Amino acid sequence: MSVFWDRKEKPYVMLLFLMPLFWMVGSLFLGRYFPDPGKALMNLSGIWASVFIIAVLSMTPIVKYMSLRVVSRYRRFVGLTAFFYAIFHLITYLVLFAGLNLSWIVSDLLDKPYIYAGVVALMVLSVLAATSTKSMMKRLGKRWKPTHKFIYLAVVCVVAHLWWQVKSDVTVALWVSVFIVPLLSFRFNQIYFYKKYFKKT
Ligand code: HEM
Image 1 (tube, helix red, strand yellow):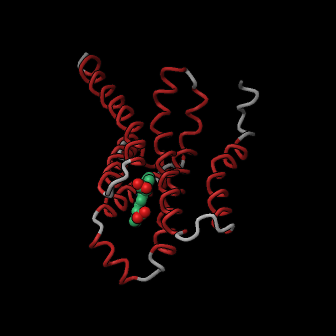
Image 2: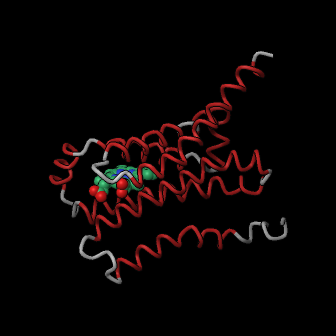
Image 3: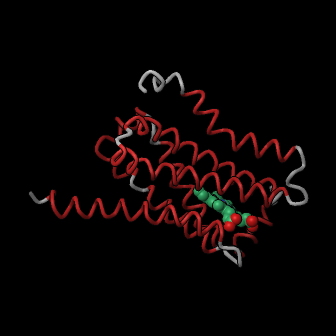
């Protein structure tokens, strides 16, 4: 196992994580998203950002219960990929959805309050991405861990972003919640039991 997972594989892992992007851009140019490429790309980019957020949250239980320590090496990589797809989602919104028209964006923001939940999630992801480097870890010291707990705020905002915009089709909101709710409760249970049984002794 360790022979394969010796970091030489990193470019391949990166290529794998970028496959959805290549697929989306390729399909766009092949006209597969016609007649509404903006809507299709908004949904797909948002879904892939959510998939990588779910992957990041799954890493702690995977390492803990399956003893797959090798997985934790990729935590930063997976987190940055989630951020990357969220930025792609934002760019799609600004360019394909809004046509870079500022007054249209302002009226859309007044019309769709769920966008604010997405913006907060993206802002938190930006802070986490900016502080994910080794030098920032050193600079923040003990404050690094509490800072990165803000991932839970981002996750809650993503779930709010999805349910808030539901009109009739709940598929995406439901699928994302099916993964996120157990992962969040796993995390909070762990913190609760740790405080109850170990912190005071
Ligand atoms: C600046 C931040 C964001 C903006 C402006 C934004 C905006 C939007 C808009 C306008 C839609 C609806 C598209 C439509 O009408 O079909 C949407 C959908 C979606 N967003 Fe966001 N979003 C943001 C952040 C995020 C983040 C951080 C995530 C996840 C990590 C996310 C996940 C999704 C998903 C999965 C959908 C599709 C929902 C569905 O098809 O039911 N968004 N977003």
